[in-house]
Length: 358
Image (cartoon, rainbow, N blue to C red; front, top):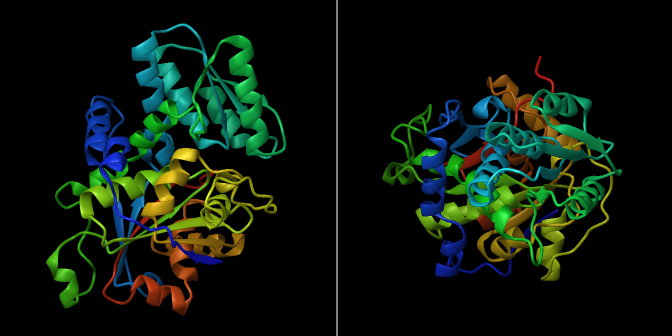
């Protein structure tokens, strides 16, 4: 399913106050003090999906935690610890990677952490969480049920909730999470960060290194919104931003279509870290006027994209390859709408490595 965004408008000063280049650089300055921080690599894949070159930002080795989420939850935890001091434990719900980030941050500041996982989250994530010192609880059949349990535990015990989604009355912590995510886009400003294409550039490509298109996968939408805010602030209105969701959980697409955040029914998907049925309020509000296109992919398309990238030496999970799957799945009409052709420079985010690396 493809949904060109009829609500697309320009990036505003209000948006910039929420998320943009300056927030990314402030967060990055904090991460620069961390012993495991270093920019992640970018791989150039010529001709992928009919583009001139696709650039895959490979987050599989991020801070030894395996995904871009390492930049989000831990960033919010450190800020909370500085503002409020030690004491009350942190608690979060997670499909896996957010919990790992929160647990890592909690261990660094010496505060206990409880992570609530739904029954469907692979045990590999639970084992990694316990290794980081977190207490793991299982509750509910899906992410939304685990979030309800985490919110209840926070209220009942006086714990500090660290969610990567937002809703009315709860936006500060998830905004800090999103600002942490934006660090990965700021790394693209480093000299030589984007490798040259492996074939001669077309004339249109010689005028700069900005991407012409950005495909970002989404669960509740925090990463996609961070991408949209940073891209619009740094590169303006020209890059086409595409939000990619599982066919079984298109909460951002359906919310954009309805003009308000919706909880969607959907159907089972193997893309577990993207299997979210209700969008983050902040992400919804940003994306409904900054994104150009929403599209959905099947589980099989994501698996095919992961295999194709593996053939190029890029090891990602199916969720990690979902942005690439969106590029590969575009219809001719969508390609025309996005002006995507053999001269395009497409930015993709390989959000995580294999869940259980070989």
